[in-house]
Length: 235
Length: 286
Image (tube, rainbow over all chains, first blue to last red; front, side):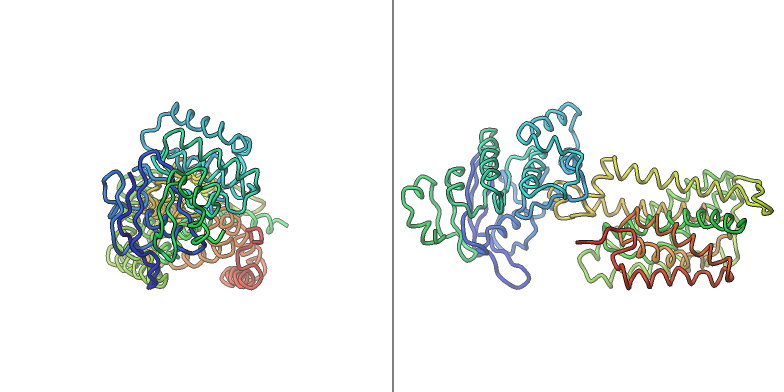
């Protein structure tokens, strides 16, 4: 569904991605592992058109994303949950959700149903729906960021380090959500540093180093043979 | 004592008109980081368009609406043709571009309508007596109308779908885009709304002092001051700052001549820049 072929990217003059090739199939959870600064986040940003792609091709459902404006990706079914969460801090929780909900072709019934669904996943967001996004705790903001992405009813979610800096209880909850989204048939490209969580959630894993994909294997293989993990991630 | 009351009323009325001018400027700055130096000239052009519509139809309300719509359309065209191509460039280039637009509009107005003062007659006739002074009803009506328009703008920004788009884009344009909000369109719409607010204030203010092709710069300057004092891009702050500065100027006019009283706003500006550079009416950032 989402295919990156030999993608190169630059930040200013520095060459940050070197021929990255990744594929996510429909409904599949794919992990992207690697140390800090190896280009995982940049890979997601390049898909979103926020980093300058200087080579290669990115296609989604066979359509070349080159020339699609950044605001057009949501309509194609691509949602992004950034590492920094990027909650609209001065907007209330409900207004944050409305940024994805107020789309063309949404009937009041569908909006209600979608909101209710997200509120059952994240009851705390219903409780805090009239509170400004910036007043939420880190974990709650992460939930809001995921919930906001779900408002787009995406086919794929680019999920960037969702558990970073969260308490274990919150991590478990995020893991639960990833499973739930997977059951709903949403594909996920999961960028993580948390190896056990990634191996648990993802079917396949790409491992990056220095702006390139160095290894690609199923989670089962990686669980059976921990040497690769040690080599690239030092854990 | 009478004088203080009269000047309070005066300050409030002027503050409401200034708040309308500043609201457009601050909205545009908040979302695009553009200080629109042509803002006052759009106001002036709006006042001229209003005066022309009034001349043809004789209906003040039609003039107000017509000026707002015409200048909104002009604002949209200006944004698409001159400012959109400059997005992402050095902020200085957009400042120069709006400055250029300002000069073009001024010269156009001079060519089209000449250097003389045009009058917009008062839509609400009559005076009332405040102590021993005659105070025109129209000034009160202006303040009320400005308040209603600002209230409408606030409701639109607070509850409307497009209002939420505008606020989301103001806070984080990259994330707004990722949520599917058509940011380039939002920019154009905000520029059009800001221009319409300027034009409407021009028509509202017209009966006070007449319409001339040089009236714009003064408004740009005054609006810019209150936008800075209120906190760049903060709508509520700009409105409060407009009223605050106008009241101060009014009170100062009791002691010194009105022309000298204008100095007060510059003093407020300088003090704000020195001690509260993020704006008087914004909570101190942590």
